[in-house]
Amino acid sequence: MRPASRRARTSTAAARDRCSSTTTTAPAAARGQYGVDGNKDGKKDIYDPGDAIPSAGNYMRASGGAEDLDKAIFAYNHAGWYVSDVKDRANKYRGAVKGRDLDALAGGGSSSPSDAGGAGCKAKGGGDLAIGSANAEELLRNERVTFGDPQMEADLKAGRIDPRVIGTLDSLSKDHTIYVTSMLRPGDSDSNHSAGRAVDIGTVDDVVCTDTSRDSPCSEVAMDLDRVEGKMHPTELIWCFDPGPSAGSFGRADHCDHVHVGWDG
Image (cartoon, rainbow, N blue to C red; front, side, top):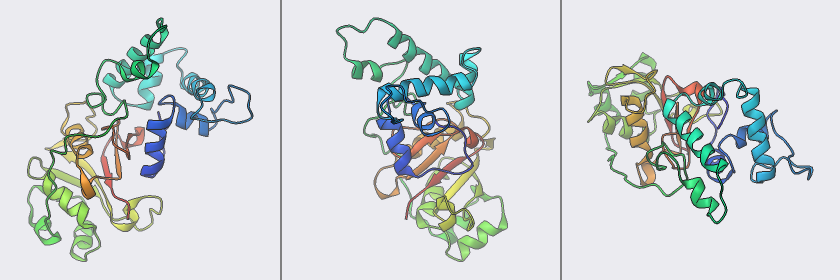
């Protein structure tokens, strides 16, 4: 799990956290104020179960887990299915594990990695969302894509928006109507928005992205984008819950009103 933050983290750090750490809560817990040197070796190492597990426990306790575990998990990731999946996995670990492969046990749960929005870490599949190659002028004429600020249209006309943003919006518009809330933000130095390489989608098919249910249009778009392959695959894909197993895809509580899609330079 990762705590809410105002800025998107880089895809490299996100991928390392999700696929290398012992627990999903450990990366934020061990690096922040909740980190615990559980094995007393003088380090707080998220890749060491001796540190990662107590750090995760400390993080959950600080989030009110002792009083209401469901609420503490939901506070991190606003998705009911995610709460159920975490608790299901916890129950499996509580049982007797003699003679069982812990790696296989970790991969088990109420759903597969692809079904659970990337709960596990495996190679991505699918790639069934074909990214188009529209230019800026074509996108501006596309009645199925709406921009929430005239400045975004000006940035498109001036060539300040990355072609991957343009192609992605064009492709999504073939199956959805899209409302864009942000693209180029020059002052946002910690995000690909600063270079016009990112887009925030606030509404899909007239459904505002505060609807974070797994079958909402925004969730569908986020999970479809995780399956894109090749150079068009986003290096930043952030939604209210982790949209898939790919590197750079993760969930954050401050993204429960938009889907963020970005690419490194």
